[in-house]
Image (tube, rainbow, N blue to C red; front, side, top):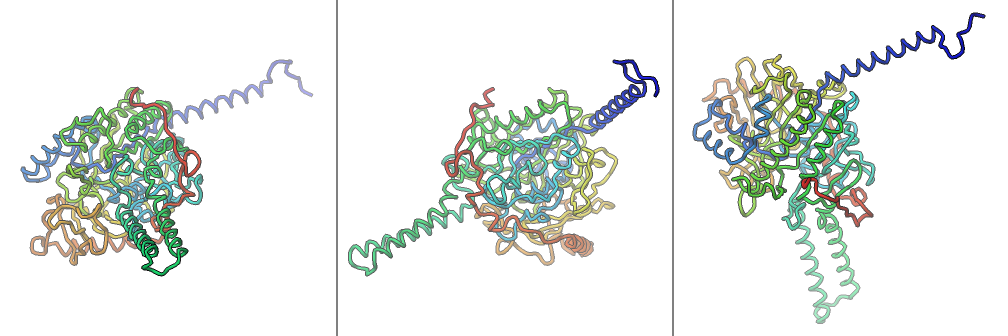
Length: 612
């Protein structure tokens, strides 16, 4: 037997092993710290329904595009009414994209495409012919669990992942607490905000917005049925009608049952849809609009402070500037552009406070910051005082219009000091879907290879190592219908756009569908173009002068080339379960998020963070 080490002392071999183990741990820790040091924090800020012409940094940038001076002056005047110094500064310190495009012209599908890097119809998050966005927190439709968001990939890469603000991608599938569509089931480890979206119904006494046409019809049918039963009852009482009271009472019961069936949902839209959640818990039901902006800002700043010592992804999904334009008293009447202008300027202030939190915590140079909107401004949003929606600058159309530029052209601003060149302006066509592969690459992850990804990483373009966008063709849908496609002919610099369908504006000659809340995607509300309309956006960004074989010698060549690209694109499509089907859209009481005992759902948060 060999000599033993003295009691209390470690054998040399064991001591060496311990040193090796400690060295390995130190090396592993150093590797992790080095890896984290290369991973930027990622701050994504998305406005809701913001018009690209509402920002100073976009409103005064049209002289170089060959736009008539009168149009430029008008644009400068309108933009001058709205002060957006914080977003303008972000553009000055980073890269501004002038041809950044939403993947859909309305909220739910645009946001699902943003989160997944895929056209929304690939996940069933697009309309067939009915509803175009999710209608209820208590519906069963939503972003499927098998979809991969950038948050999920970054979470796997060690990022803290937070979402503050609007979700609008569904909540539950089969029970009130399964949360199958919830942000925490899609890669976010923290959520505070609205699982739905702002609507006029969220303001006490506001005019009905959610499915207002259906609601009006149901009310009318109820009144007609009640009047019929009352008429029969009076006739029975006066001896004019020979019918038993049992029949009269049975008919009255059916009318009452019909009324209760629809009023249980539509009569309480504010209570069911206008709620705030923290993670899986409802914290305010119904929400108080006047305090919501302060709560969102407090949550965003707190999240940055809590996670400043580790890589984080924070998606701030603003409720501004969607109607009903909830604006705090500090900003009411401050702009020269009415309530909408007040709301835009408050949004800019919120963005500034979030950027200030990044800087105060010493994170400016290690944070990749992005600002955009989910689609263009809502032209049909009006009241008796005038326009409540945004201004889309020189671009034709607005929210809900699948092909016209005004519905899909959005701000695209990126900042990463020391990495991205400050003050750079890029005129390459890019998409909201490109953000998915971009942040995945920056976070050290890999883009899924088992599905079609429509987005392309913007890293080479933003850093200047690539001259052109990776997109040769982009396809613009309204619901499931392809309305337009664009071809970036990189050799010549021409940017062609082909329209296969366009909405019919009302009244004729107007720039929107003022007889409806949104322009339709199909049916009598659209015009099918055969041959298609052709525009050269590089010379006519307002889409005011359609080309013809007589005015453009290459007309047939361009239309044929885009048509071939459309055929190839359609080969990538495959059927998926529709999330906007009637069975998924309708309100189901057993799926309704609730604080308290259903249906007595009510709770309030104490205090107003904006006061601090």
